[in-house]
Image (cartoon, rainbow, N blue to C red):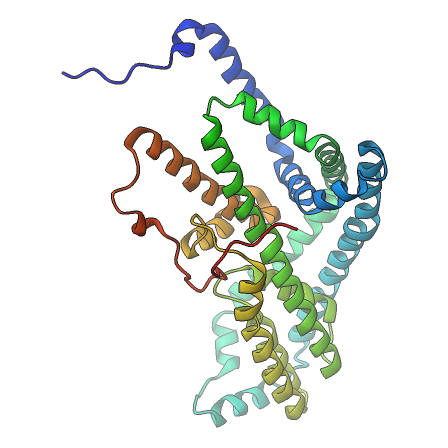
Length: 366
């Protein structure tokens, strides 16, 4: 029977030290686990804001620059973000109350659908799914109350995010150099992994967020001009839906157009449809302009990474999930090349433009 590969020499020569290192890593992960999404949120913010930190360091000390960036981020980004989200939740409950009161003219919407060759009884659909709808409303209400009840935990989490952001801005390069020194990986592979993960972070964190934000603001302005209520909620919903694959902005502007028709404003509804199509199709131009192509970033990784990241990491998983899966692919590629050589057909691993926002050429992180 052939013998298996021998373990590395450092494992055999110093088993006690190896065990201590592994146990220490597991304990550290256990400590991080309760607030992992806030730690990752701090990492994402640090990645986005690090170019600002580098420019400020030309004029002031790193600590002063990091403190300035953190204070501005807290006042301009984090606190307004909490206020916008709370306002969006309030408006969401207002939309639910409007639907339950029957303020929307369902018959008019049915007539519009029938005029386009389809027949549907929205009242029957609602009655058939009334239990599911009530359960969904109850879950949303419970989730909102749970969020209010967990305000102390939210405050602690945001405090962790702020301190992680400060530490990474001030000592990020040193921490990254320490991680590369600790990992038992050849320098060439580390450099390749670092460049690949940087591309993934740029595509997932910067590119996707920028595209979603631009489309959300565009649609929000259009709906405001059209006189649609609950603008903050609809803008936030557009941002979230644009991040999700296979959904996009049409998940907002179609119901908004139906609402305008139901309240007797068909011209405004038609204008929203035309403008909504423009916003939706702008995705095909914005993503290639902002997101570069990487070998580890394709449609399967994006879809599985986003939805799996939401389950594992919470809201920050929208950005981190694809990076985790893409980074795993890069690590496995490096491992396979070290132990099995180059793949037999290099063309088989070349990335292809699959419609998820990849474009030829790599974008440079600003």
